[in-house]
Image (cartoon, rainbow, N blue to C red; front, side, top):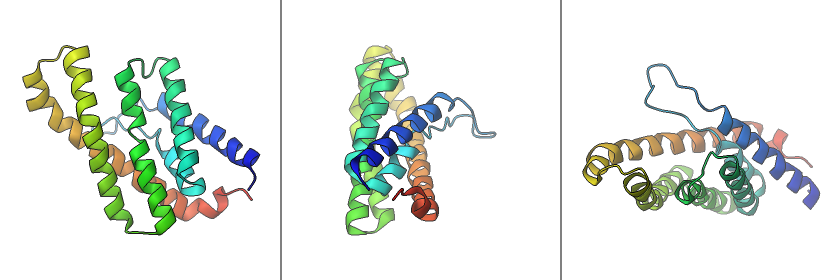
Length: 172
């Protein structure tokens, strides 16, 4: 596959990711506390297809566009978007070395939470003036749980999409 086809695929998956981010304001019945964000899925599938370099490029483009359109206006929210690069790194590692996928997904989620912890703290306590005690005792446990759910769903669905449709998705 030549570079122009790869760039076209990056542009298409970035566009699809932005579209998913804009229509993701729905709630799942009986799970109204969980707002799914499937905008990372096309980027993860792209990483399975073409590798980590193209996944990072797509993530960066999507993050910039979402920042310019007002979806991620603060630098902290931009950094939260970029924290998905940890998952891209582990998907790329899996793609290269075919190691245990479940173990790598768990490590990627843990690393993502470690990166998100100080950013979330800064965002909620200093930007939105939420008292520290409320954030630590009430908000932080739910942020961890929802991050684990969101990333688990995105990684698993991306893996399944690539597994079952990967050969059809790769343009020769």
